[in-house]
Image 1: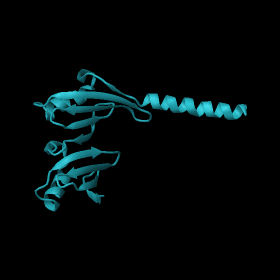
Image 2: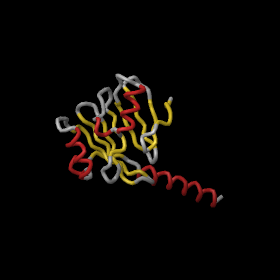
Image 3: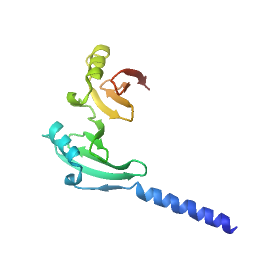
Image 4: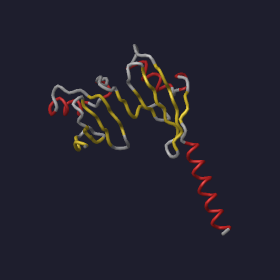
Length: 147
């Protein structure tokens, strides 16, 4: 019985610890890594930052999220590298899209723009204005249409 109570307490405390590590908090834009600040100034110089949050992920470290007045949301890793950009219905800046991906989209999906782009360890996901989600490898080679 004592062993079971200890096990239950251990599981509860572990759960509370993990949950507390993954809490999001509001921070000032100046607290973003310099690279993230530079990204916003370069690609969204006319936009206004409305909210900046940081979240400590259990295995990934700190991640940052920036919301702009235009509705665009950008996520950054602990070093300030962008990991996801959701421009809602506006196009993502062309300079952020690898050339091979731009070429594939203009050939296969003319009259469409990238409105969301996400980088993962070895995959780049993009969403087009028509709602289609595409996956590419890091070399920009098309992998599949994602449902």
